[in-house]
Amino acid sequence: MREILSFEKIFVNFGGVMALGNVTGTLVENSITAVIGPNGAGKTTLINVISGAIRQSKGSVRFNGRDLTGLAPRHVAAAGVARTFQNLLLFRHMTALENVMVARHTKTSSGFLACSLKLPSSRRDETVIRKDAMKHLEFVGLGDHADIDAMSLPFGLQRHVEIARALALEPKVILLDEPAAGLNTQETEVLAGLIRKIRDKGVTVLVIEHDMGLVMNISDKIVVLNYGRKIAEGTPQQIQSNEAVIDAYLGRASESPCPDLLDAVNSDAGN
Amino acid sequence: MGRGNLITLIILAAVIIVFPLLLRSPYYLRVMSFAGIFGLVCIGLSLLLGYAGQISIGQAGFFAIGAYSSGILTVQFGCSAWFGIVVGIGLNALTAFLVGIPTLKLRGHYLAMATLGIGEIIHIVLLADTTDLTRLVAWIGEIVGYEPAALAATLAPYAAMTGGPSGFGQIPTLSIGPWKLEEPGHWFYCIWFFVFVAMVLSLNMIHSRIGRGLRAIHGNEQAARAMGVNTTPLKIGIFMISACLASIAGSLYAHYVTFISPSTFSINESILFVVMVAVGGMMNVWGALAGAVIMTVLPEMLRFFHDYDVLMYGLILLFMMMFVPNGVVGLLQGLFRSKNTERTR
Image (cartoon, rainbow over all chains, first blue to last red; front, top):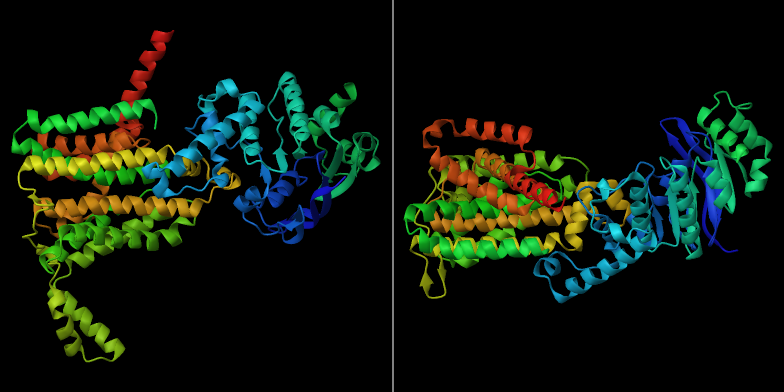
């Protein structure tokens, strides 16, 4: 039960609005941790802080004994923490395979000259990049879609390309920002299997999700955020019976209940 | 590089070899030689525009640095023409590097503003004649407290090197080893050899990790950064390459035409380069070449518009942006693809 990534006392302010206040948590190696909470609870902000996309005003992120605080996104990625995006940020005009190949950028080094002249070093890089990218694309089940323009794939498959792209960084930790958003029940089931497969291959998963069925199904641990603060943490069973969480979701304690999460909880109760 | 590109390259090589044999008219060879020179600039611009998503409105400035480096070094200092070409490349790489550092660190189109400025500055410097220079020397002399007359005397031999607004001539032609390029056919082969090499190198680069990194930046800079792509050096690198290609084209122009003056290197020329790339197709280096050829040959055919050429360029750009956003090459590719899919259906 080794901690691979921890974030401590994270504070983020957006022009006076507190997005995260004193959030602390840890990811245990080879586990799936879910972060849930109503819209605007600061879930994506947390991923942005860990991945270096935004800088926290206070607090630190440690990964594998190394301090990630203040590192640029590309250094965080190279260190072994990969991410996907809530609103799918695939590269336009590139095939699924090429999208994944971009993530092999940090693992190779041939420069402008070597690439223009097609020197042996660049040819070698190219073969290795293609092979590795293909491996990751096959891992998410998209081996047959390698040469299709990524943006023309069905939405659910685009999510898989994004996950393959993040995995191609060969990270120790992957941060998935709402991977089930926009997927139907069947696609969500496939996704659940994929997330487990990612964990089983030795990658620690942090997933932000609104789909309570998925969260309860796959998570080893759940962290609940509300208004930028952590209100609960525990196993799915503990969270389901946690008073503070039920209050936050049903809106008893909060002033503005969140209808879509209400639905999520209700549909989960129905399952 | 895909098979399609390889075939197109072979066709290009064949056309280059056969063209002067079929069309012996010096006029056609001359027009196509200019198309090749502009093609070189456009290949660089299209790498920047279509693959890195950055626009430069100052390519004429880089073109000018190449031309004047070659011209001044050969005419004033008697250097070898090839030395002039190399110096031009060096100067341009340095200029692009210095302009690129502050502008390309930022996301967005700051490069367009900066290159608009640098192109205009270069043009103004070239326009400066001896009196402007004497005035400048006097001004600097006053500031540093050095006798202006003495400073002016030291700098006098260099003062009129650019020839001011009227430019200068008698630039020697290129020679490759013992052979002097004298006939239009020689020049055609020489210029298109450069174009062909630039094409091969560009295609190699596009289909490598560097090219993919650049296309990723164009596709989505935030995601590119998150995937570990070091965006700033890539953008600066491609900008320097585009400046160097413009420099080679400028040097070739100077040795080919043997006379250069600032009017060739104005903002109109910079805009014309952008129009060429837009006409051919921004997402494709082949488009850049096609655009350069079309936009060089077309005005020759539309001579009667001559006084309104800028207006025509504007109209063509407007028309292309509205109705053929992927350019001529993009349009052809689209037609070819839809025909193919119909057949497979």
